[in-house]
Length: 90
Image (cartoon, rainbow, N blue to C red; front, top):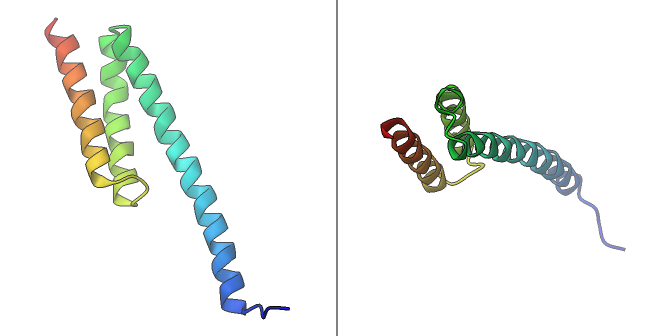
């Protein structure tokens, strides 16, 4: 039977907890993106502007915690900004 090193067991427990927490945060981000995209598709300018700040803040938090890649965060923010500007101008 293989040896079980205490540090290895603890590291495994930590990984499980961290993975669970990161999944929850990623799920929260996906939900926020889905909501703002729906508002943009419906051309709900006021609702989209209200959700925009919160969504951008959430994207930045996820990138700073390394849950999503910084370039992915930039891409999300750029696309949302462009879509919001297109709706505002029309």
